[in-house]
Amino acid sequence: DIQMTQSPSSLSASVGDRVTITCRASQSISNYLNWYQQKPGKAPKFLIYAASSLQSGVPSRFSGSGSGTDFTLTISSLQPEDFAIYYCQQGYSIPRTFGQGTKVEIK
Amino acid sequence: QVQLVESGGGVVQPGRSLRLSCTTSGFTFRNNAMHWVRQAPGKGLEWVAVISYDGSNKYYADSVKGRFVISRDNSKSTLNLQMDSLRAEDTALYYCARDPDIAAAGIGSAFDIWGQGTMVTVSS
Image (cartoon, rainbow over all chains, first blue to last red; front, top):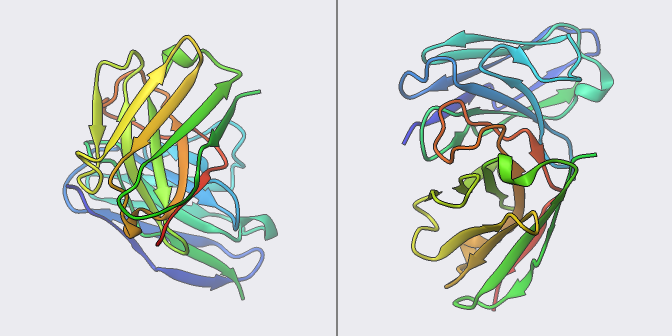
């Protein structure tokens, strides 16, 4: 199974800050990496696919990059509605696996 | 609009069974693979199972293999999860999720639409 490891597990940031979350795969997954956002009591929301492609309707302040084993999700200017937990997920092989999540909190 | 609505959750004793359903609308159900993903209270996301667009291919997480069966009825646009021999560690919110691809093991798989989930609690 491919293990996905996110860092940090949590971070505190202020509105307007640039935030970067890292996701590392235990083996190469090419660019088959997706990102999700989950707010309390809500289902996850699909943000980014294929490492860097923005899902329709997702604000352009979100961006993704990386390939192979190392990936990043960047929020260029954090907005109040961005405080949530973010998960990466590999779509390279079965079983599909998620990172443990990164909680973005208000400083 | 595209909608996934899960049902069938509840409280069940260890060793018993439960059947979850996911009723879909707003898209052509037979054109997508479908997944179940679960989330234990306060924990992260865990993929459970996937079924191809036509039901011919199915895959499971090791944690549920041999106990859970995923199925679909394309005539009713419905996804199901039969859960047998339930354990305390199966306690979670169960989401159904759509895959943009038709294949169960397609490379590049993702979960583009999610339901709101149905809670399963396994407790004596």
